[in-house]
Length: 402
Image (cartoon, rainbow, N blue to C red; front, side, top):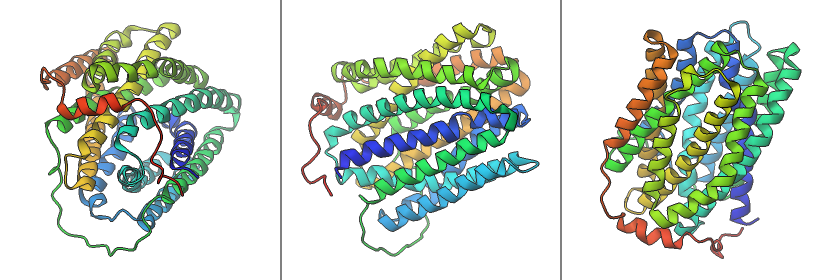
């Protein structure tokens, strides 16, 4: 099987996991009776445990098939425990505990996967692969969310077992995708040596800036759940339409965004996506029209897709400048996850003191200020100039076959 085929199959399966396991997980937690703080905490704990894993564990593990598989097995066990814990009398603490265990293991495979792929894929192929992966994900998330939203509503009479069935499908998908990438990992055996580590050594100014922007983006996640489920009482199908609309817009406009990256540079397109998301949420807490919310969610989802592709591309481009490549990937993911965890906690604190419309306004202003803390140089990064003309497609290396 070609490496490109494995990568795209893994992308499809991992996005199936995202749909069936995580798209409605926040909704499930809210429907189980979680408080606003618990909803925020459920968005914060997983990335914070991801950060702990990246800071002290992930960077010390060798990139081998055995390590990659072991992290996948732990992840799968945590997923299954999360799914079945929903059936317990007081499931929210158990959900959060096993979600945190999952976060520790998922960071091992997530940090190792780029290092594995760099051994098989030419550097100039990554923008194309990331863009294609995103389109595959958007199609699956769009169709899957629409179908799953209606399924959950139709079988709401068996709540919460309808959610358990969905989560078990996600468990199978993530395990299958992990197995595909594991075949690309080096098969040599290396001894595990744990020593004192110093995180953030490979972080530069741009990494911290991207992490700061991530903090702002993460602040709206729990507020969307609170507003949609607890305030507006939207159904699963209505929430699914948000994902569907964002998916359709992203599918249509992501190729355009990729061409704009080639023409104007990755950093400028990334900036438009970040500012676009921030401005869109300013009136959000005042809006109760479902159709107007649908438009805003579509725009935010499309900007988020562009943000993800551009930030991943910047990460892969910057990796060649770092002698300790695995440490760089770990530090990059560490900063991103710290941003996600801190952002969700800040949202929980805001909603405790402010009305939800005030939270959205404060967050929008904060995100714009975060973005303005970094002054890009007038000329594009020399390495970025070299990379962008090469983002024209092409084939994977001939060696990228098994």
